[in-house]
Amino acid sequence: MLWRRRDRTRSDAPEEACTHLADAAAADDPAPLTPDGCQECLRLGEQAWAHLRMCLTCGHIGCCDSSPHRHATAHHHATGHPVMRSFEPGESWRWCYVDEVVG
Image (tube, rainbow, N blue to C red; front, side, top):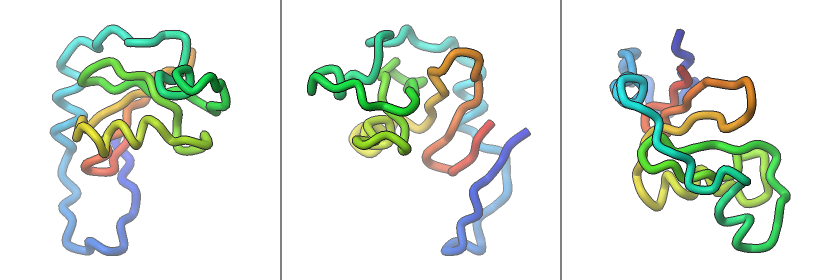
């Protein structure tokens, strides 16, 4: 099941399935680059993240948007990598930044 965040600025946005999520589901997940936490927070000497997210293109581990630094979203903006998944135990959902869809 896909959930699309309501985008009031794009009333013509198609409700098609996200190809980025489909591509990520068809590929093997990359190995996490820093399984101990958010790469940038650890580099800063902090552990203030709320939740962790993993980029499904390269394995980057970043903190979520509820965290002070929002490194997972910053990684997407810096790289254009489209899909991340929760890196929390027991969670398997994925988010496409491009289409703003969770799957």
